[in-house]
Image 1 (cartoon, helix red, strand yellow):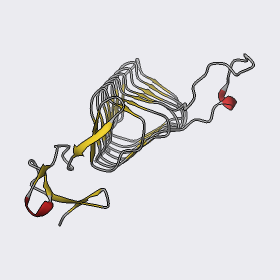
Image 2 (cartoon, one colour):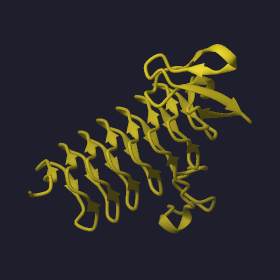
Image 3 (cartoon, helix red, strand yellow):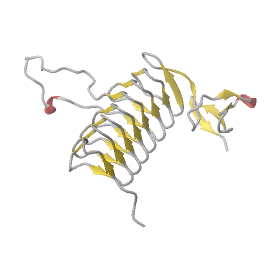
Image 4 (cartoon, one colour):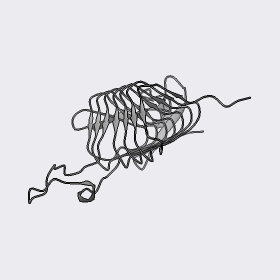
Length: 200
């Protein structure tokens, strides 16, 4: 049996030096730059920008007009919502203090690392160099300025943690014995050392 096909829209701009696995779909007007790597089974939406050298894991969804700047790394199963931006310049300037136009050698790019299964909502902005833990959920419109723990639910500008989410992305509820329970999965969790731990 043949492997699932790679599908790239005619209007997409995919550099020949990018590496893209099978069963991935790249929609209209998306741009995938040189040396980017995109895993299997991904969906790259209309108008998405994947910068040079960005790494995208398997089964990710980058929704329409999301912008992912280098050197970001996305784990497997990451969701990036419509219009979300992963930035890479801590102190952005177009020119040097002397007035010279900056080029690539003048930047020390800091990418975002997004852990397995994490989701970043529509029009959220993640500042350069911030790490998003596995299975975290960033609300739509949030501005993320600091590291986000695994399973954290973060909202606002700047983003702040308001709770925890399970593997399904649903906010956890208090349960017996000081545990937290996912109402969708039925799974229980416990907070230990400010980290969420799934119970057997």
